[in-house]
Length: 512
Ligand SMILES: *[C@@H]1O[C@H](CO)[C@@H](O)[C@H](O)[C@H]1NC(C)=O
Ligand SMILES: *[C@@H]1O[C@H](CO)[C@@H](O)[C@H](O)[C@H]1NC(C)=O
Ligand SMILES: *[C@@H]1O[C@H](CO)[C@@H](O)[C@H](O)[C@H]1NC(C)=O
Ligand SMILES: *[C@@H]1O[C@H](CO)[C@@H](O)[C@H](O)[C@H]1NC(C)=O
Image (cartoon, rainbow, N blue to C red; front, side):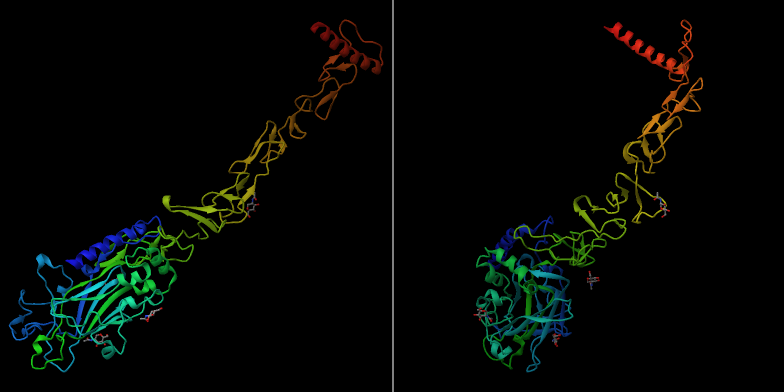
């Protein structure tokens, strides 16, 4: 009960601590769980589990009452390996049990391999609960690569020097500089009575406390070190665990060969509080096809979110970071700008995760648009070239005097002022003459010819032969009333001018 309370307290504390990394807006990780629920258990050598054939045994505390029986064929008397991982219902403790040490002096050896087929990360102590006494010698090993290679996690013996040639240590002997040291401890192997102490522990909390202080109040220190100290995250990570049981509990004395039925191993529980390693890219870890799998975010994929999703490889994959403490950094994978994404007109794009949109940045070659697929204003597409061609956008070159605007249509047509024509509006319709733009002709040879022998000058005015006058030389100064004055062209011309002046004067007088 006390243990459970401590565990609960710790999980609550841990939950508070990790609440900062719960959602994937930034760095995120799945909640911890007791991974014994999903572990594969295997015991070696074959035949090490008791009950086949049925066998009698007794206990260290009742060595002369060898009436207990292990029988694999009876549900009530069998002790198969699954009972290490089950939940103890209604206070009824069930356990795996080995054969007795009847083959002494041959050592009684057993391996328990636990596999998850998934990288996990310890968040609290591994606790192995032994019924009928803890082994006097054992090793906890781990693998980080699904069982290909193994390394010791911790050694346990009642005499470390004798069993492993190692000086006994405690986790409290460690300092931040050697917190990942593999030690041999004598704390969990001595005989104190089978019912007093059942637990063999890999102390995770105490190791974290070396960094974060006794109540784990300074988790900042842990997170900072997780980022900066190589091997710290690895120390708490594993895919497989293996318990190598090397010598059973002896009851505080030497082996007594006359009663070997009291020597065996029995394990009721293996508690593995851990979370899936998702490289800070997932807030959920789910069982899919009986294998744990991170529900990857940040455009990552893989069982541990260990690579970028296809098409999101614009930068190399990176794990999320705990820093800055509190929110962390997502280090998300961003969209890959292939040649085609920006049609070859940009090698930069920004990915807006929220709306799942990629936008090319700084389109070159006079292009614009999300994928640089349009021409900039003032340019139009040369449809005989592929979109990726550097020269695909051609300048409109609208004539400044002939056009309403410098912009042209998608087919390159400029918008012409009246009288102007041509793609660039740099020529004039008939009846118009280019004069810094197209101006309408006053006179010309076809539609508005000068009359009475007058000549059209620059399409702007008729030069009339005296005595004719008027815009088109259509009038004669020899009016019906006065007749012609003299015969000299010069004076007639003068007269015309005078008449004009007279007319203007008359109008002026009338107005006044
Ligand atoms: C336990 O595993 C180790 C490492 O693979 C092996 O050397 C040893 O023989 C195994 N022991 C038993 C009892 O199977
Ligand atoms: C282990 O996990 C990998 C990756 O998810 C999967 O392909 C494989 O089938 C799993 N193996 C077993 C034995 O479940
Ligand atoms: C760890 O380092 C401390 C001091 O830095 C030292 O006193 C201690 O013995 C070391 N522990 C181990 C197990 O090496
Ligand atoms: C369009 O491209 C073709 C092929 O290069 C070229 O011959 C043509 O002159 C281009 N048109 C314009 C308007 O630039």
